[in-house]
Image (tube, rainbow, N blue to C red; front, side, top):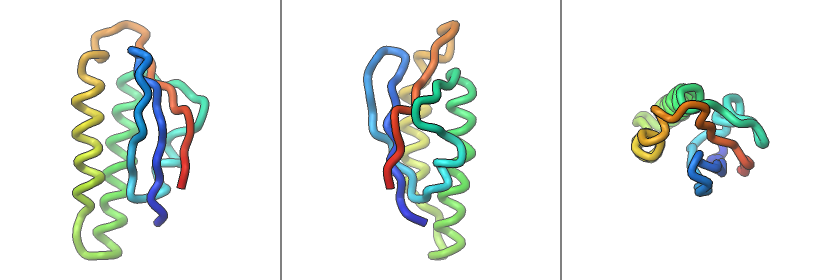
Length: 95
């Protein structure tokens, strides 16, 4: 369950390093791939929830860092949800 960081480029051009407590996030995001806002948010929710669940299964408690990251993503992505054609690009993943 190695923690994984993935770097994204938001529609405004800013780049940000995101965190997951599990490499499962790599099953949902691919380096070099761009995702429409709704798709990106859905993938992030699925991936970070699964990652938190893996932590809970192993250690007996959910991963608050995964849920905090999801909250930050939801906040960051909100301004782009109404922009037609807005995309987030996954620049890379590291373990």
